[in-house]
Length: 335
Image (cartoon, rainbow, N blue to C red; front, side, top):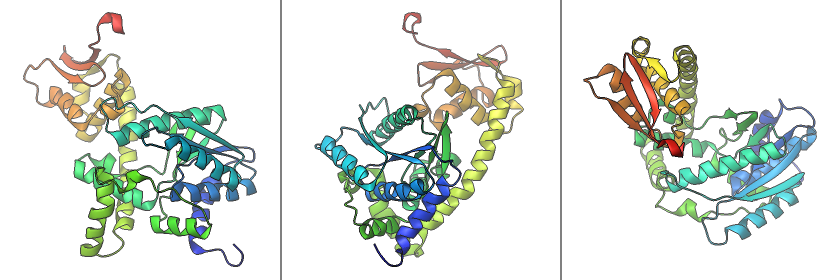
């Protein structure tokens, strides 16, 4: 590139540097890469910053098999990652099973599952994801539209752990336009996913129709404002979740929860405890919705003798003898 580093490239590298600074020489980092502009510049910056710190960078791409030519695209991404200088490349094909989820959610679940397996295989403690500030703004608007509560409005987490693996989103403060500029400046040939222009997806409609209207009517900077709101809400949600986990640990008398003890909890904590109890009993997180939690809560605060509430995962929650109990509804031979 020669001369002064372009501001967009510098912006991306600073963001990635911050994510990698806490790691130690010899640590392994997996960079998830679809071949889009965001993940390509993430991989490029990870190689540049990671190798200066003595980190081992593994570039990983996941083929969901949902589009014609997806295998060829995955092979192309592997070539691009190798050209960027990653220490090792890996490509995995997954079977996307809806399981009651929409196509986006099902693909995401399959992708994250295989990224976890890749991290385990390479003994990586960190997986980097390429979501940008605009992705965060879209997530907030979708959460608002779906009435999904504070956790959804808090958007994507900057970092979270699944077992020994930390999933980190270094680019949440970087605008999508900056990412695309960095991609062009670095001469990277980004893939334009056809799904990103398909109005059949709610996220695409938010990106192409809703956000531009908000920018026009309310002024520029809406994406940054929404992302900032997510940051503010996330701190509150994290605190409430921590309190709820502590309350659940003190209340859980598997398989029963005391009605009296639950009613003594503030409503936001009580409902979180109920959700934790349902998850612990085997309810799939992607299928357990707020309406389920409200129905469980009604067994406490609006009980008129109703016997149980059906939950996803072949479960039911029932009130009996002063307790709430979560039971499997599967035939005994299927358990």
